[in-house]
Image (cartoon, rainbow, N blue to C red; front, side):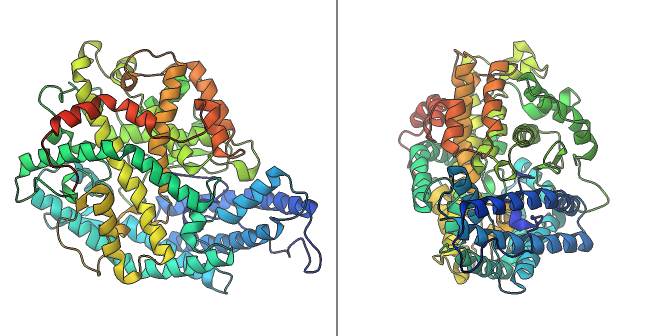
Length: 610
């Protein structure tokens, strides 16, 4: 789940990147740069970004919603222009970084220009085009990718749905293996080439490698940010291990020792998701007797009330409207992609767009009437409302306080999809609201997605950081992936994998070079935002049952944070809404404390870990 239209600085591989002036740098070789010249450079950058973003966003939109050789070529062309010119801007920004008399704001903007590129191309002639061609090809391979089910081809969105519904271990294995073999493995050679080119570009910008460059965008030294992610994982790891232990036992009870062992790692294809990043789809397998039956399923409620894609989106919009946000513009309904067309290839992966960086807000989804997509709609709309809140800031500040903020906004709203909220919007009868005795089931269902995701959210970028640094070499791509999956998630593939494979490429964000740490941060930030909103709303009951739907005070305070965009360091934005300047795993642990206690009791005498 991503959003685009953020000055194009963080867009995937600059497939729709900003153009840069062809004019010479503002300083000569014989004169030291001045603060005035730096400001003139910043002003020029922002003007040209704004001018180019509109056409580049339109190219990106067309390519994502009408995939052909021609639109791939257009995307590659604009990607080449954007990558090459963005690197020139980054290099020029570095020249001004130490100019005397710079204001803090100027220093911040120059740092953003220098470090915000996703895949930097070196200035070597042809390198930008080569990098863009590879990036476009990888993205197109993913979008067109298919696995098989019972020997028949099945596309990406359908195979995701089938992995969540199917309980036949042989068919799950077939889908998992075919998807990774057909989609991931062919990318392996191109990915190695792309890594080499991007690392050359990062070196020209003064970074040891691309991974270090990625970690430099969090208002702290890159090495300190890596330590922060490790600390945050340590905060929440005991909860994940307890969940893993419980789920492994339940899978063993269902499938037997031949499929899932009582000890050790969990088989990766049994968890209801192609990447085992969220496990909520197998809640029926792990639900405890009595307490596990919460009495309703959101997907079934939607179908019973005859919800279609439009009503689902209108309901998501309604939540934000209840907080006092202005409704979405009519163009949103006219220009978004809500359903997968029958006549052409599209990139179904959900994303949110602000094409003109003003009011041309859109989402792109292939919506199905189910619980996952109901939550995803709330998430993607969070991007749109964030985009609109900071639209009047200078160009370089039209972004989240950090990339985790953008992901967390919609997710913390989605946390408020509680039984009480479902009653408020007419999806659930008040008489069907589960009692306190069902809290274990409610929390377990949440944890199967929220907690289960944490190690995956961390390891995807740890894997790429190690590739960029050379710790994982091209001849060890698959082994490196499997090692981290075992280390952090406690998972093992259903069949042996060798170095002809590249299972990481079967994940969109790896194929598309979208940094992933944002999702790890977002999983934690959303609970901080949620607790702050519930406190502001005066909620007195169990935290996990809180809904701030309809609370205008929460909406007003939230909007103040959103309007800050990236104009201040992220601790300032965090403090504006939550009162604290530190990201922490403690609010999540508080939210799930009753579940942790219950899991520990269930796991007594069971082997812990893997």
